Length: 50
Image (tube, rainbow, N blue to C red; front, side, top):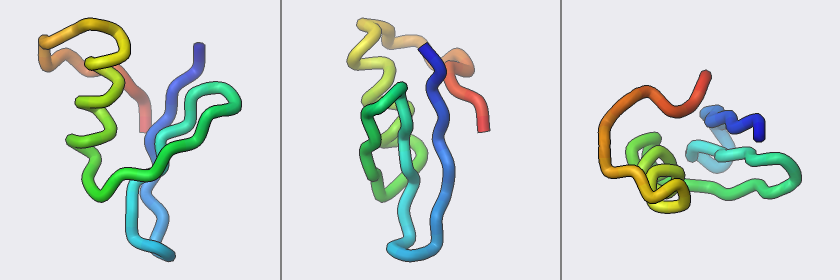
């Protein structure tokens, strides 16, 4: 599944897109933590592309 995190300015937030699902987070770290939670990973490896 293609996963992307993009910053938008209005409202200022990071938008996580996974297929048809789109979620908004205040910080990029929160978005990456959510992906690790879904995958069951606790490591800090790069998991998304900009």
